[in-house]
Image (cartoon, rainbow, N blue to C red):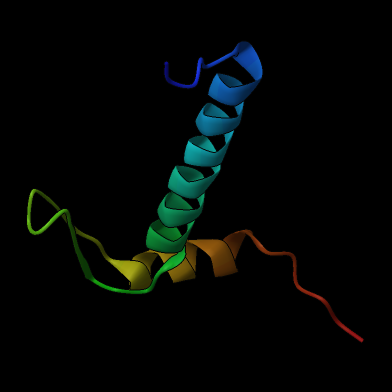
Length: 65
């Protein structure tokens, strides 16, 4: 006779897994690496972080003292 899973247990596992996945994705997308490879090369992405930085700088309002 094993442990029976109830709705609270399942929702806790789903919530913790979603939070872990979201934190990993946040770190990946905020990184300044030009090439990202996860899952031992299963998913690769080449980015232009310099281009992203210049777009963010252009959108930011100029603050003058």
